[in-house]
Image 1 (cartoon, helix red, strand yellow):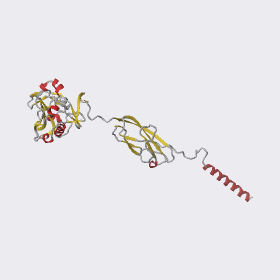
Image 2 (cartoon, rainbow, N blue to C red; image 1 turned 90 degrees about the vertical axis):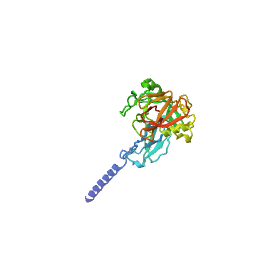
Image 3 (cartoon, helix red, strand yellow; image 1 turned 135 degrees about the horizontal axis):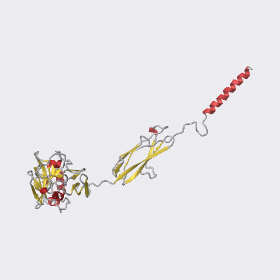
Image 4 (cartoon, helix red, strand yellow; image 1 turned 90 degrees about the horizontal axis):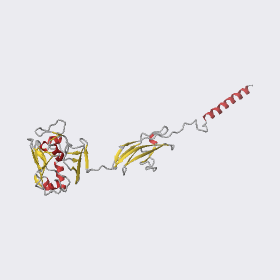
Length: 330
């Protein structure tokens, strides 16, 4: 009877062992083993808009997977989503690319985990042509006026005098009141339409006191310095020895700058307004302030063109005079 008890106990243990073994065994459909999941692909691109010189920076470091650590995930890129992978798999999650033609592209990222499962995602990138440095025309968005421009050497100049602001009577000083103010020759708005406005130096500068400021110019343009005027004059043929001198200088550079001249600068002889509020010399002089301070605080460097002379006059004049203004592209 005792032996039968041992046999019974042994049988029970054996049966339990078999049941335990079978319960740990992988089922044919793998339901008892956690399934590997596809990785989640994610990337950023900076910038998302650009042109054919823009370096686009791609970063897939936020891609993830439940079973594979991020550092072991591999990525590859198809910059145009044309079905051809442009890079090999790598664990480096950042990359750069320059698109050679303007278009709207779809960049494709594929992420692969340690067991070969993949995930993909895309982003749209807009690529434009390189902006033209010196457009033939442009619009001043502040008032909707259209201006012409001309490229001379490495500079892009407005090819007409600026006409921005509210007309005030010449008997009133232009002031720092947050409003651009202008004089029109003979206090006639039609003269501003033809010749541009006349601005005292401080108003032109918008009350800044350093070279190379925007002043009353549109965004992307600035007031030319004395040196930038010299660069223009040298480009038109003035000698380096003469360009830094004062008074009438050069040979025919003034003729090239005047309306009808070969440079395309098209300077009109719009005269000026003196510090007593009197208008003078329309169709005789063209007068332009630079943004450069003169040797005294009340003076600034300027240029004069004449109806009967081919040279350019460079000198310092009182800032309270009101002259025409040309802007130079940044």
